[in-house]
Image 1 (cartoon, one colour):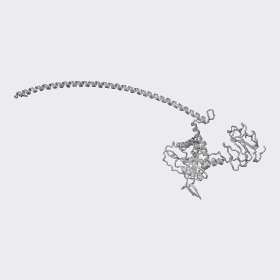
Image 2 (cartoon, one colour):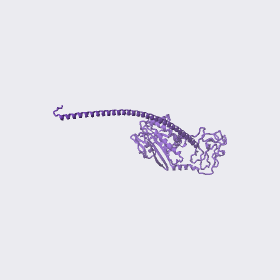
Image 3 (cartoon, one colour):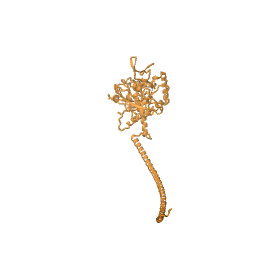
Image 4 (cartoon, helix red, strand yellow):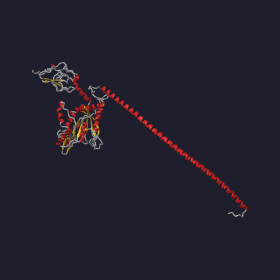
Length: 528
């Protein structure tokens, strides 16, 4: 094979003449010495059908063995599917166009630009817009009372957040949310810190995780309801979804508590969990190393999925891969500054020595700050939206009856889905109305039968009472009649007695008069 030219000219790239207008390589043989075609998805071949090309892949990159044009310190551009394309520089007016599988089989086309257009300022426009709108970040701190959650937050953001210390007398788990506006240089951050008050302080800890799960689901539901509104204001909506969950583990040095395992298992599908060992200066270095290994093995054996720092981006792959091996982080928090040497540093003073918070030989605080804030904050936000929220949204919409495809694997439109769901709802409503009507008629019939039966019983009772009344009335009348007869007989006897008495009194009176008369006529008559 002949060797390729050492350097392409500004007006003509060495491989551009081998591209057809359709954007496909011309033949399944290698047309350019030292040049190789590869698909953006990692497949190698040429653009003919069946050889890995022909519009079946995202894009084709021609990778010459000669040195590419200088990029002047710029990173290679990425397409929407994260496919790397050829670098572009202002001194080299060629731009390679990405082709997508959404182009319905059309091939890629390379279009030369005669001069500078200006769409290379899009990243700057996005940066300026994002900076002007500001950012939000929400952290959930889960852990038992007294593990230093508030102190660690103050140390992480180098400020003093207002808050009342929690007590161990809470009857249940309560979530306390506080939002703060922070400013660093010209970047504004709306930070929300949610702490679990009373977590692990109850005797019965069986349901300690439920308030946390309900709170996370409530934030997802609020965002979903905002998305489903007819008039959405997502650009001004305060996103309260939890982006990172710092799970504080007590430095026991033995193993994870059952409460920790259950809680993390319930949360791993809803939030990005970053386990940390709180107050790690309470145990020795050797014990801490064994404790980390024990925690990692228990998490793996129980199927708990913690957040792994991403390694797909080449710029942070090395540091993230290294930091993944240091999980869980052993941290120490302190807001006190002590003079160590000639510098004032955050540290903790003990009788046996000083523990420096930002000394990586003493604890992993610097590693946590680097990974959480300086390197992977945007990835945490993206994972929350694209993974955890999408899972919640999909499950919620499936519960509501929405699907992507019908039984024939044809895509559903929202209108058809709505109409089908509406017809189903109306059918169920009519069915329920018919069932309620029949139930109402049945209840009315049963009530009428009960009323008729009660009326019949009342009539029978009335007849019995009426007959009883008549019998009692007849008895009373008979008794009254007998009493009247007795009264009449008594009156007759009384009249006869009075007559006899009057007759007797008259006879006695006449004898007395006769005797008086005789006495007058014969005064010497002795009367005895």
